[in-house]
Image 1 (cartoon, rainbow, N blue to C red):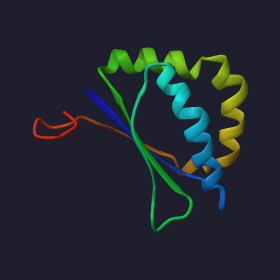
Image 2: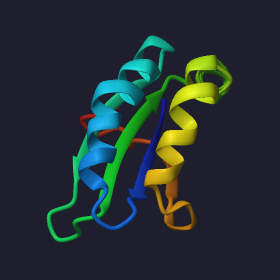
Image 3: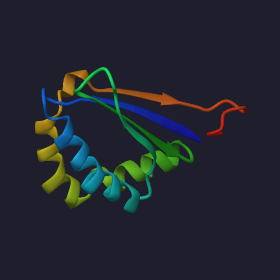
Image 4: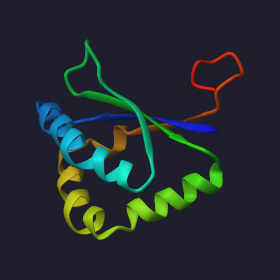
Length: 106
C-alpha cells in the first residue's frame, strides 16, 4: 500500500473555488476511477493552501488508476483546464509515502 500526500496552493483568494471543484467534481471522478481519497483539508494558517491524501494498493494499481483518471475525457477536456487556472502549479508538492506497521492507515 502506498499513499500520496498532495499539497496545492491556489491562486490568491481562489481556495474556496478549488475546494468546491475538488468536492463536487475532482474527488467524485477520482473515486469513480478507483482512486481512494483518504482525506482532503484546508490549512488553518494559509488561506491558499489545500492538502489531500490518496491511497493505492500498489505501484501497479497507482499506474493503472492514473491512466484511467488522467486520460479520461472528463479530466482532459473539462476539468483539467479549469483547475489549472486555480492553482499555482510551481508550488505543488506530491510526496509518496508508505505506512509503517503501527500506522492506523496500514
